[in-house]
Length: 226
Length: 390
Ligand SMILES: [Zn+2]
Image (tube, rainbow over the protein chains, first blue to last red):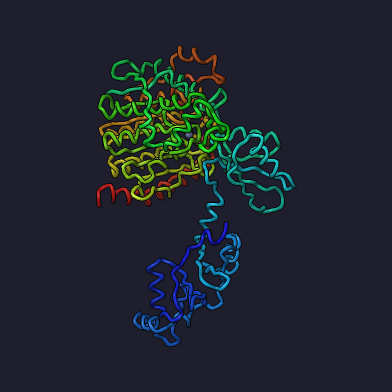
């Protein structure tokens, strides 16, 4: 999944000569938190709503009229971050997410080779992309399969479900281990009736969780209908 | 009050193959139990045969390409083609004559709607209907055509009536929701086991509808292992609020009973009490807001011998306003016990304490209450505001 498929194109931007008051109005109007700063077609900075809020005159004019006057006479260029961390359109969303995490920032302007602004990718865009990646796009049942940490374990499980039983597997996730030992694969399988898949996996030695392998979510023992 | 049970033995032809869980035996068992208990009489509570749905009726809710494909594959299945339409899978295999028999199932639910909307009966029950996973152009989860959507759109077209669709099958009613997702005249309300683990993986609170229909798709996903008490509590709180805000002219009810604790395809822990009570609550609300009109169908239910006939007999009794005694007639038991792999229960209702309580009950109930609050917070303001024409 590439950044260009998830970013907002032609984002709202400001010029370095804009006042902070004008910039603040833009963030409020468009309900956004980040404004790329563009000059002569090139990205020269970024301004967040937090930058605006925390900007203050060196003098002690902290009352409302004083603050309005300050925002009205201060330019974006005076407050913006000049060392912009940006992304390329063909970076992957995973890369972008890593950059957002590492630098603890909320948005990445997306630029081309000539540093022209193409779009913006926010943490919300990344979150939406990941939610899509986690789920299956088509109707499916979610199974948890415990894998011992050795080669071929996942492949064998997938082969049983996808090849032997010819069920369509919509997605496979193998979250990293919290401690050394077994892993859990999460399979989205396109069927309303996973019993055969569960039985086949168990017959092949796997532990299968449906709804889950978590102790809290195991199926309680059934009393018979009297 | 008059009621009609839509039935004809030909409906058992909706049959994939002998090992398939969607087994028409459950229909035979249900109807024979209703008959054995004297709950149909040829007078006020009579059996009415279905009719086949017309192409025009199917095309109100399905794409022409899809209906053509089903017709073609109904005669001869071209390998490879079926997959595109959600057919030819383990869940929904292709079978000879599937177009004709599914049209009869669809026509059965439309027939039920005709009887109710025409005032001949107040309630009708098409026990073989309830194919709530069928989409506009795709089969899914045992469902080829959507009898529910076809009946709802028949009601819309013929009577211009506002329809409240209620679905308490354990799976999310994704097909019906999808077909009416942008329609403010059809409110879909589905209560089901959360799609977090269960097929089809949808039906979350934030699926509220689209465009004009925003606020007219409601979903109450229940935690795995939810029991009667919590489920009924939520339903009692939610349904009257929704019905009074929306003011429907008729309720269409999908009463799948696969949320029963013995059902092998889900993790809910309902007893037969749930099906009797929810149907009763639904009928009371219908009496208050829409002249009692309820068009009901069956749906899922995979504990074929021990649960489905009892659950749907209770649904029928509640719909038709009849008292059902608790003892299952000996004649019915002896007729079927030989064929049944399990010992058939002798009581219509699961006795109190028949199943062990779920260990995490408090936690499950608390989570369900939070889900209800979240749904009410998001959906009711929309529904109230728009329903009253502000
Ligand atoms: Zn179901």
